[in-house]
Length: 281
Image (cartoon, rainbow, N blue to C red; front, side, top):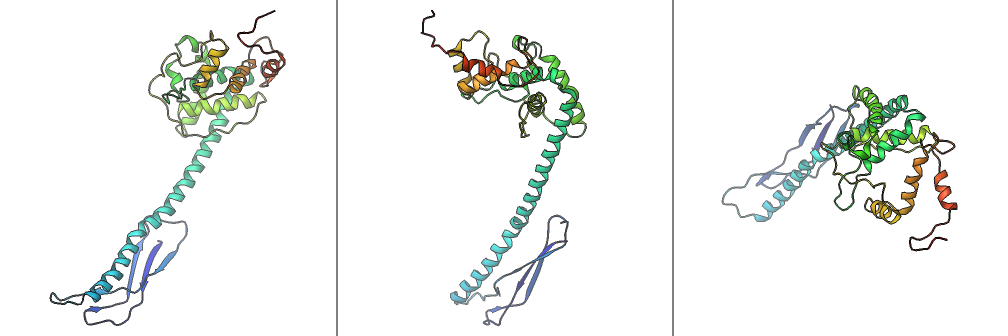
């Protein structure tokens, strides 16, 4: 077992105090994968005895000062071990998250094909799209599982059912939140269709209730309305266009409905833009 040894050298002192060699061992709180003994050499300290009628304040101050130093030293020992233990726990937590992340990716890949990717990606946006900056509400919190009956979420039950199968396999090994499951699934949906690989950090908590209604951008909004709606979510006009372009994935009328690309974005760049106040010819 690892231990901390305090060694002190001593020397003769006055008749009002006596000194003795001291060696104290403090066992570590937990076993280490290696055996070690950490030695800390303290300054000499004294064990003092003062008669009630003694007036040697200088000796008292000197003795109390050295004894105080020892007490301060001893009081910090738990923190020294605590830092090492915190490092160990952090490393283990990071490794655990990495293993869970790879497990989720593996199970999602088994159930999300190119033909099902569009529905999964839509599920992701409808869960995350409820976020509002002002109240710091909504967002990627898994609340979509309570909101499937809403008109704007029509058709998402099938996508959630697909992920439910994968989540069951993951939960059998390590419990994960719906929020993390949906986030990783969205990234994998993009990847299986030829899009970029998007790393996802785990740690989201699931909401215990649905988000407020009316948080998703309405289909009837015009361009200024959409810009304002996305601005409340912390998204720029460029990001609005990029997200709108994701509708080429799985949509009819496009040459490659199962390929994640920027064809819609290119169309918008090539098409002349007109302000709302400009008259049509």
